[in-house]
Structure formats: structure tokens, C-alpha cells
Picture 1 (tube, rainbow, N blue to C red):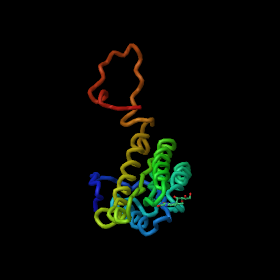
Picture 2 (cartoon, protein in one colour):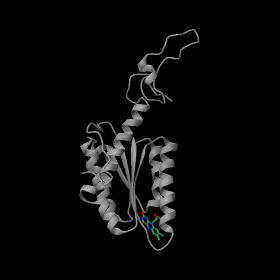
Picture 3 (cartoon, protein in one colour):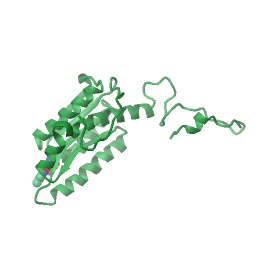
Picture 4 (tube, helix red, strand yellow):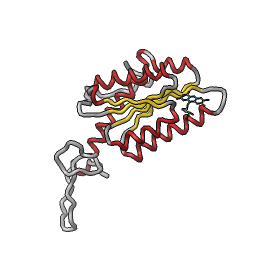
Amino acid sequence: MGAESEVSFSNDLDGTSVRVGIIRTRWNDKDVTRLVAGARTALSECKVLDANVFETEVPGSFELPYAAKLLALSGTVDAIICAGVLVKGDTMHFEYISDAVSKGIMNVGINTNVPIVFGVLTCLTDDQVKARSTGDSNHGYDWGKTAVEMALLKNQAMGVGMNKATGMGFGETQPVKDATDTDTPSTDEKKRVGF
Ligand code: RBF
């Protein structure tokens, strides 16, 4: 069940040890419910346990970033999906909210170091909403896969669950060399990207 974006995901995403938070809006309830169901399908395909999925709700999309921040700071989840649907009306409301919510969600992820999935459809018409939240083009499915992929990426980068010195970086931690060490780095070492 891929979404219209046709982004591909590895079949090996293993969410066995991943905890996911879903924050969903009550605005556009039926559409958001379908999107969340799509996300949950993807999570269970990735072997995320039901017991490791925490779901809560907020009134509208504008409330998503704040609730995501609280959940991220709680330290209880490895990734968060913010799910909502914004539909353009007759005023500028849509533009302001869409802009604030997308930036707010991005900020929460960057500032709390918890991956946050932007699961908010910003549509001009109800038909556009349906086309992105039903059947084989349910974007919620991709959001579920994205949450697992980003949780695993973060845990790998932070060295979670690895029996080694942890650090902010991908790959193994390397000992610091002193000035007398003239060894040429191995090819493996050169390839490593660390922060
Ligand atoms: N919230 C949504 O999640 N989707 C919408 O399409 C939506 N449209 C709104 C339109 C108007 C005119 C107003 C006043 C609010 C709307 N909201 C919508 C709610 C908004 O995200 C938020 O919950 C409220 O503004 C309270 O902070």
C-alpha cells in the first residue's frame, strides 16, 4: 500500500524495539482516522508492538507542535507522528496555520532530538484529501514507515543498544590520535562520517 509520492522503504525495517507516539487531531476526524490506520498498518508491518504505540489527540493541527514537544521531552518514544488535515477555506487561515505547523513540527524535532514525522495533509479541496488518505494512496502508511526508519537512524547515530562508547555520530567511536601517531587512516576510517 504505497502513497502517491511513491517513496520506497527497505523491507528490513525492524521496529521490534521502537516506541512510536502518534498525536492526531480531532479536526477532520474521519480523514485523520484513516491516515492513522494507515500509519498503524505500516508500524505493525515493521513489527512495532501495539504496546509500544502511544496515541493521543489534540483539537486541531495548530496544537500539534506543542503536544509533540511535551511527548518528545517525556522521553517515552523514539519517534512521533503528528497527524492532521488542513483544508483551505475562504480566508488566509490555511496559509498561516500550514506555515506555523510545518515549521513548528520541524523545530520540535531539531530541538528535542526526537524524529517527528510531518503527517499533516495541506489540501485545497476535499477531493485532494480523499486521494491522499484512502486505499493504496494512504499517506499515513508512509508516515508509519518513516517513523520507524528515523527512530532506527537516531538510535544508530546515538549508539543506543550498542556495547560501545556512545557519541553523536554514525559508526564506531574512534580513539583520539596524538601528534606522534603517523598511521595513515584505513579506508574504513576515512569513509566514516562522525559529528
Ligand atoms: N485545524 C485543522 O487541523 N484543520 C483545519 O482544516 C482547520 N481549519 C480551521 C479553520 C478555522 C477558520 C479555524 C478558526 C480553525 C481551524 N482549525 C483547523 C483549528 C486550528 O488548527 C486550531 O485548533 C485552532 O485555531 C485553535 O488553536
